[in-house]
Length: 121
Image: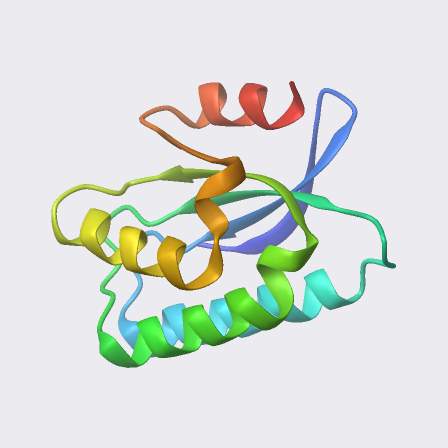
């Protein structure tokens, strides 16, 4: 569980890893990620890997995710890859995408390696 920049085959990717986190910890990680995104000088666009495996997402988390997604993250995102989205989390991702427009350059993956390779393609 981390929020960090990594390098994959020479390209920078912001990893927002929410695996197994409870709602209050997801919110904390989202806010840290938004701060990192804000540090990137405009007009630079970023690549983001999200991992929601076993993360607990509730209404409070969704409100914060959508707010920061609209204001900070999505306007600065070139591509995003998402892991760990099945069942209820898929419904919540659809709601997030509708609110932020994130689905234009977003793909779901089962494998982190596939996701990373797509992000740099």
